[in-house]
Amino acid sequence: MNEPLAFHLLNRLPGCGAKTIRFLVGHFGSAQAAWEASDNAWEALGQPRLTPMAQGRQTIQPEREAALLAQWNIEVFPFTDEHFPVLLREIPDPPALLYVRGAFRKWNERPLLAIVGSRKFTGYGKQVGNELARALSQAGYTIVSGLAFGIDSIAHQATLEAGGTTLAILGSGIDDECLSPQSHLPLAQEIITDGALLSELAPGANATVGTFPARNRIMA
Image 1 (cartoon, rainbow, N blue to C red):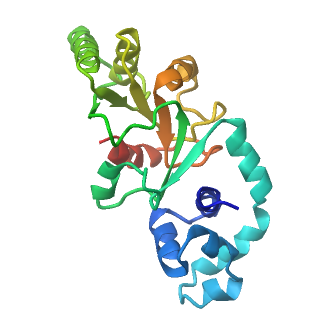
Image 2: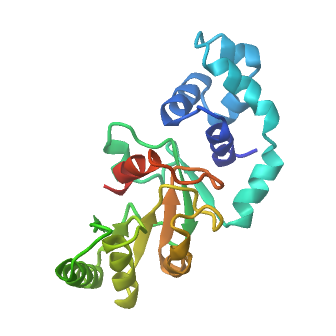
């Protein structure tokens, strides 16, 4: 088992969020050590909520999870990885890991700029979003947005048409089956050619009302 896979397995445990994963990794020394530790070792941490998580490991099959990641060509970047986005290290509640699907890996080398806006946009909003995305991508910026309806998808599409690179931060898993919204699956397929889809949610995770505010902190 490698460390990225171990992070993914921890992330699969119900109730095991970013703060808990960082705590476990800090205590045991690595995600792999945390995953392989005994139930008693987890219980000895003195947090009752960890007991059902420890027992929940029995229901997760590492080989199946590794195959799922491979099926969708998804790479896992833990917060302990030297290539984890440096900007995300600066926020109060950084994700414990990122799932990445696509060609882009230069988030620590190229300037990034987010363009987001209303789903119910005006004609003026569409024009400005389009022009900004085109001009900034041609100036060397990687355009970040959320693949949502409205200005988000306009920014992605304008960047692609200008020959630029764009990243889509999702409030769902980045596999085709859970990607949200489903109507933007063709746009997502275009994005991953030179850009990437990113999420802290595991493949198979559907979008909910609460996942979008969490997604926004990553996008920002």
